[in-house]
Length: 85
Image (cartoon, rainbow, N blue to C red; front, side):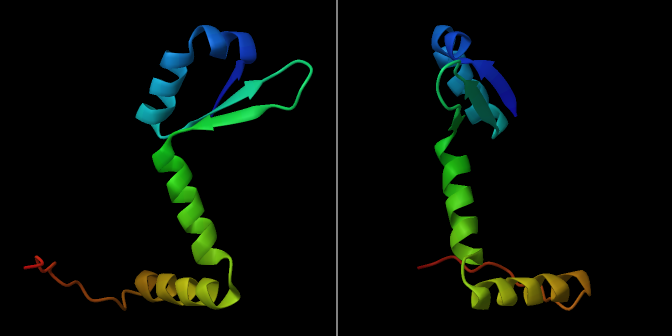
């Protein structure tokens, strides 16, 4: 995570955007007299939203935890992907 002042972010906006996209990271933009903000790539944002969606209900969370436990115990099967017609 990169922490950057508002002035620096404004002066280097393209480079800051390029860096968060390339690094799949976020940049915290600090402002002197206002709340700070976060800049992230759309892929990072979409990934976070998908994760939030998957764990927001107890049933989904329980299912994911069960699946992870099965994976860690070696109780999974590998299957080849099938191309759609």
